[in-house]
Length: 327
Ligand code: AMP
Ligand code: TRP
Image (cartoon, rainbow, N blue to C red; front, side, top):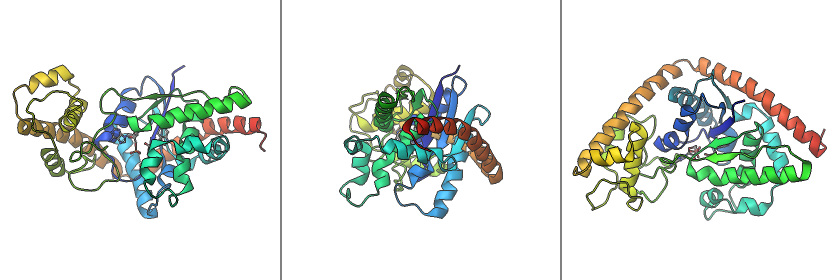
C-alpha cells in the first residue's frame, strides 16, 4: 500500500516560483511513490473577498498550472474543494472540537488579519479547521507544503489527536513535509518578506505565467548586498534567495553552484539565473498554453477527480458522523 499525500493551493492571486519550489515541484517529483490527492482550495480562497468572475477563472488557471507542471490525472486525483461537500461538513464538525485559543495562535491569521482583527471574516479565523478537514478526510500520511503551512499541519495533527482521544481511532495523524530548499522563497526587492501571491507590484515576484521580459527585469532588479562573494549564506537574504531559486530550477548542488560562480560578479550571476528561469518557464508555459486551449477538457478532468475524491471523502465523513451521533 502506497502512502497517501494530500496538498492544495488557493485559486487566488498569481502563482509564483515560491509556489512551485515550495509545493508543486515536490508533488510532481514524488508522484509515482505515493497515492496522491491534489486540491484547488476555493473554499479557502473566499475567506477574503473575491470577485466571482475572477475566482472562477482562477480555478481553471490553477488546474492548468497543476497539469502543466506535471501532475498527471492518471496518477493523482485532482479536484476542486467546493465540488466535494464533505470538506465543508467535516470542517464544521471539527470546528466544534477546536479551542478558539488554538486558532488565535496561528501565525498566518495574525499576519493576514493585521490590525483588522475585528473586521476580518470568521472564515479567515477558522481557516485551519477547513484545512484540517481537507487533510483528514483522506487518511493522509504526508502533506508537502512550504514552510508557512507547517503550523497548520501541526494544528491538523492536534485536532485529529483530540478527536481520536474522545471517539477512538478515527483520523490518521499527518506529517508536514517541507523541502530542504525553496520552502520559503522571498520577495525579490524586499528579501526580508516572503514572496506573496497577492503582491502585484512589478519586480517583487516571479510569476509562473510572467513574460520573459518581466522575469529578466525582476531578476536584474533584485536586491543583493555590497559583499561580492556568491555563496549560500542565509544571513545574506537577497543573494541567498536568488541562489536557492537557481538551485531549484537547475537541480545543481550548492557546492557545484558556488564553484561555478566563484570570482564572478552579481550582474553575471543574475543574467545566468534569469536565463535558467526563462528556459524553465518556457517549457512550462508552452504546456500550459496547450492545455488551456481546451477548457472543457480541464473541466472534465476536474469532474473525474471530484468523483474519485467524493468516494473517499464520504466514507470518512460518515464514519465521523456516526461516531459523533449525527444523522
Ligand atoms: P498559497 O499561495 O498560500 O495558496 O500556498 C500554496 C503552497 O505554496 C503552499 O504549500 C505554500 O506553503 C507554498 N508557498 C506559498 N508561498 C511560498 C513561498 N514564498 N515560498 C515557498 N513556498 C510557498
Ligand atoms: N492553506 C494552504 C495555503 O494557503 C492551502 C491548503 C488548503 C492546503 N488546504 C490544504 C495545503 C491542505 C495542504 C493541505 O497554502
